[in-house]
Amino acid sequence: MVFGRKSKKVVPFRTTGELEAMAAAGAIVGRALVAVRAAAKPGVSTLELDEVAEQLIRDAGAVPSFKGYHGFPGSICASVNDRVVHGIPTAGEILTEGDLVSIDCGAILDGWHGDSAWTFGVGNIIDADRLLSEATKLSMEAGIEAMVPGNRLSDVSHAIELGTRAAEQLHGRAYGIVDGYGGHAIGREMHLDPFLANEGDPGKGPKLVVGSVLAIEPMLTLGTTQTQVLDDDWTVVTVDGTRAAHWEHTVAVTENGPRILTLRPE
Image 1: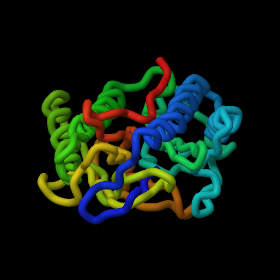
Image 2 (image 1 turned 30 degrees about the horizontal axis):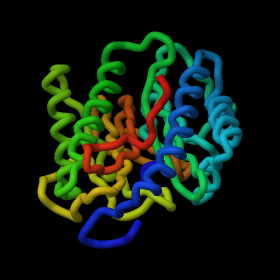
Image 3 (image 1 turned 30 degrees about the vertical axis):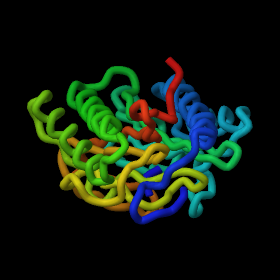
Image 4 (image 1 turned 135 degrees about the horizontal axis):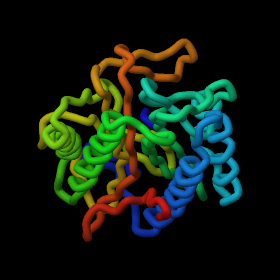
């Protein structure tokens, strides 16, 4: 969801044992996302997808971290087409062939949070939507690669931005980097400081150290960078109606390189 040992000088960090606990929570999130994608077919409601995720999370002995968070009613955020993030699952929203769906999911296990998101198509989707999702994934992966000891927070932001620009070159089109939303530190709370922007100059902010954990989550659109919140006070949509994509992993800095804590089963 978009919204440690606390220090202004370093990104909050965890011990090896704490990272294992976070990875256990993250694995549940990964399984829930895979289950939701498998269930996402034409004629299925986003509320049904929510029920799939909640059942899997609770069966695994965890708790959906989104449900009840500041009053949010769902266990997932289901954001379809022009919805960027924080879409509320409902019985009335029925998936159709060609929809572009972003699912954000979180789980708490033994007090530790996992948080992850991905975007996929329902059935056959047009090339522009497929490439948008791919570009967002590439941007996330570029940010993950910057999760190394000694980098600063904005080095990750800059890497995400460069990942977007590289995808633009690869695809021969422009993408909008959603303004005002980004990633965050995470641990025993879902949202911790610092906020992680998805663009910016390098070399600024707290340092990454071994054990630092961030939720890295770029959001791109086929047009605007600007969004608005619907009357439900949650759902964020593009102001121009263009489609959006959202990818996210919870990632730790280790001595051996970045470690994704929200791995999904094959």
